[in-house]
Length: 447
Image (cartoon, rainbow, N blue to C red; front, side, top):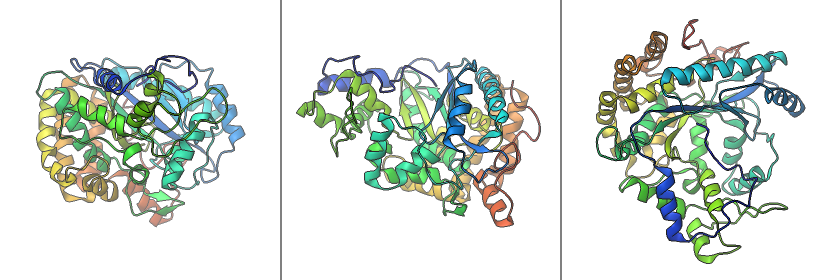
């Protein structure tokens, strides 16, 4: 969901230096805002390919021209460009699943129309299957990010420039215990996240060759490392554990008003508050630091679930949105999901996500993992029962049921379709939807 997130272009706000205790208090206050779950959002990242020659990279000049045209389009969602030229559409908080789907679908129609005029299209695959990572945006933030992530290998460039996802945003939940309590939802997001990762894995290729992983995108996140792409431990109070994680995570960059930004090596935000060097950190620095952490579940007042690969077809993104919304915001479904995923916690070995065996198996095997398949079946069944109670349309419920029949019930995920076509010698996507038959089977599953 769009919110008041700093883009790094203003170094003058919140210039007062912050201390370590102040940072902890601020993080506790801004990252978990509790109350009855009532709004929903989604952030959709897309690869952009030539519709006729998808295996040829799109020239930067061509992207610049069509993106300039898109800036003149009136949208209900925020449209931004990722470092590699991917497009991201971020919804405003919606009061219902139906409202969210309707607004985003209309925006996507408008975006696709502009792209199609230049022979371009949006492609729903979690990782670029043909082209090597290539940076499109050259800004101080991404210069610094690239320099920082290059220290741990090439995975950072793949994440920045060649990946795409469906990120579902749900409210943090009630302050009190129970299936909709914030502590339960925080825990559920991490354990259910492995199931969502496996069920919607859709990135098995790099350079037109299988990587051995159903979600190569998640593999790249794991290779980036725990400080930048890992989550906190789950054996404590969520606010306290997240605040500790924020303080102990490395600073990506120290912004400046001129010249390249400084990229310190190994300096945590806690150490920065204590050393006050190269200058004292400010509230603006803290706000910016929070935007440089990429765990699978990121608390931003709401919970942002970041482990789902971009999905095939024009409307494939609706299925993970609907399933996640049902399992988090319907009390009965939330309780069922909690019981279903609880045995999976043993496979984490108490290690934070995604750097634990559970997430590794989900990314590597998808639903070919028997326990993940059985858990997914229970969770999707609970979501199907709950969706009518949430006001979902018949078309949306039918799309989820079709996904269950095509993938979950067969121990498959969208990545299997890409691999099947690769082995059959077919192109990875044709004119129009990418990665296989749309899950709506020709129906309009929007509002």
